[in-house]
Amino acid sequence: MQNILVNILPIILMLGLFYAIIFIPESKRRKKYNQMLEDLKVNDEILTRGGIIGKVITIKDDYVILESGPDRARVKLSKQGISNVMAQSTDTESK
Image 1: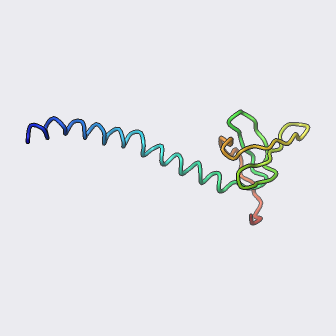
Image 2 (image 1 turned 180 degrees about the vertical axis):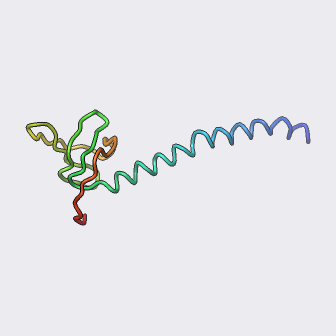
Image 3 (image 1 turned 135 degrees about the vertical axis):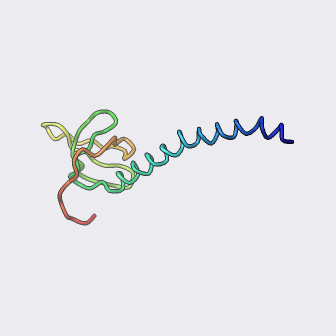
């Protein structure tokens, strides 16, 4: 019985270390990303995963409308396509 425990203990320790190194930081990153999407407001400047930088014009449940470029071209974009918020708007409007 003790011999089996000695053989299984390193495997259990490696699985625990793997969990601590991989899954815990990924969970924290996912929570931070979802919080960023929830805090998104009109007039925030964002960067998309495709590299487009623009200003949020409209926010709906699953998508945003982004205005970008000198011609003020508007693009409908899934919220999951947002990489990060470059600059928060300073408006104090409620959502």
